[in-house]
Image (tube, rainbow, N blue to C red; front, side):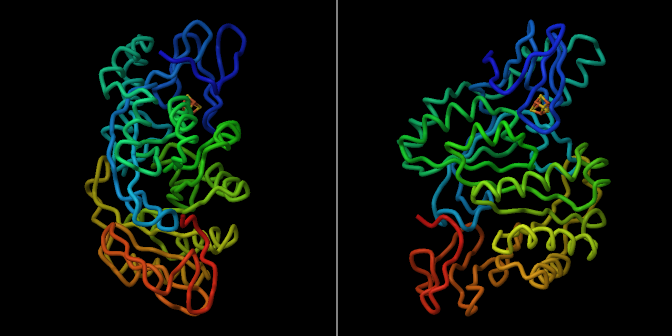
Length: 353
Ligand code: SF4
């Protein structure tokens, strides 16, 4: 097991994990809420260090990131475990595995055995090997995704520190619970984030995700303030977060931070504990798109649904279509060059090279 760097010692061999905003106090032998950070003899260890459970090379549009090196591939990696417990999680088999194990082992009063159980999942992939694969496949960036990255911070930190000298960029696809300490420590390599803003109701976060809204809003503001490229995603779930009032609140919040932050509005498909909820209708997604326009957001995209008109990037000044997309495949129009609209010279925010 690998000793964590984001924690502080407390009395009686307890520790406080400082990776995410839950800031678990973990007693000797215990495990944090995410199920992958364990206290052994007064030290915190990351159980899943070097243990990848999902690895793929994806189009960057799949993350989704639309204003960051469009049309490139991204090495995507995740482990098991999560600090949230979203009932609609689309990757629940990975994300909820360690959490569920922790809860079972706590009931059975032998939570200290979690290391043995969790270690069975995933395969050995040390940081150096990740870099070798990226270089071999000529992939320009790495995304920590599939489950919440910050819970396996020490693993990603070592990968990204090795990646930096090779010019390989780093992205987090996150639920927005990073601690200030984690953001500080990642500041040398973290180039972009896509943060889920799952709802604008604290009750939704409490009931459905076992989390809170305000820390996510704080992280979005903080990440933007730090100048990390940021895109925001909302999965629209029928009957749960799709009221006009709530979507207006989300759009208004994003616009209050920066109307140039891209807002991805994604279609929900029944999964995990929400198999009885129908998929999002096209009409609901289109309505959300219009709400984004009314809030004066400059870049709004529908996802998980084929809609070329509403997944294109338009110049906010002259309306020219700059990047069109079909599925995960973008094509750059002649109206877009060096990050600017060639018709009116408006600079489009993002990382284009
Ligand atoms: S990363 Fe895990 S152990 Fe650390 S504070 Fe968050 S939930 Fe708790």
